[in-house]
Amino acid sequence: MIKLSGLRVAFDSGFRLEVESLKVREGEVFAIIGPNGAGKTTLLNAMALLNRPAAGTLEIMGKNALSSANMLPLRRAMSAVFSQPYLTNDTVFDNVALPLRLRGLRDAAAVGEVLELFQITHLKERNAKTLSQGESHRTALARAFVTRPKLLLLDEPFGALDERVKESIIRDLRRVIKISGAAVVLVTQDQEGALTLSDTLAVLVNGRIAQQGEPQEIFARPVSREVADFVGVETILPGKVASNQDNLCSVEAGGKTLMAVSSCVAGDNVFFCLRPEDISVSLNQDAGGRRNNFKAKVASVAPWGLEYKVELDCGFTLQAAVTKQLVDGLGLKPGAEVYASFKAVAAHLIKRNL
Image (cartoon, rainbow, N blue to C red; front, side):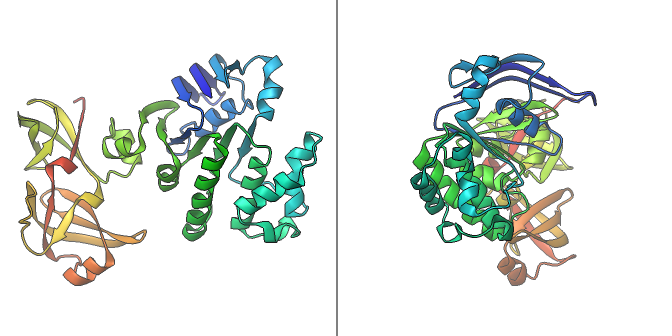
């Protein structure tokens, strides 16, 4: 559906987007995540044919997308949704029907179908300016699908939505995408939304794709510290591999010996990475077969989404995610003495330069 190579977009500010290779297959949901200023919207705008790259090739649906002869037909075969819905001062029905009218078409059945898919049929006579934020986003998504696009481009479509509304919209969007068969490119900072929707994930850092592949693999096995930081690896310790026996590495980090499953070899300088949900906290030393067990003191306890983040001083710092029930049940508060444990397979080593 999309194939680009050697893509370059430069700005007077000095920022450069440089993407060596990227492919989006038919029917695939391809999510691009990354921090603010990474170039996500710039890349999406190039795919939407809104920004012309300074160099490189871009094919969409098998056609040269940078040829002026192909641009209008390709634009009509795709839809875009931005972080702001940009609805007109008209009814919901007329907003959704707008792309059809711009093409000289009238298809009330198509409008009715997408209104039903996004569960806003009851709003069709309402003025769009009176809608809630969630209703406005649903209307914008329905408008994008009314032309039955082959390619859908989404730029931070869940921004500023509260969690309950966002989850509901993501659930319906996932269902509609499957029904439509459209290829989707989603750029977002919302990691949960990207994980829920995407088949393939790319992490964009400083204008370059740092890693791409299956979403779960990227979150579990980031290839660099920059990627690890962005995908929620809260514990990143510089260390050195002391030994490796059958891919079980002994790592000297934080003044302790830590165990990790890895193909790294003795002498490798590494970052020892752990996600907060992989750390267990208890009042007794773990007896469940975890190779890493440390006596710890609670440094802080703070709300973290639906859970709590507990900072633990084990001689080095660990960040653990725990439930409210566990905080209350163990009496976790600053100064409390506990045990922290994690499996060797939960740790991930990233080779680093000195």
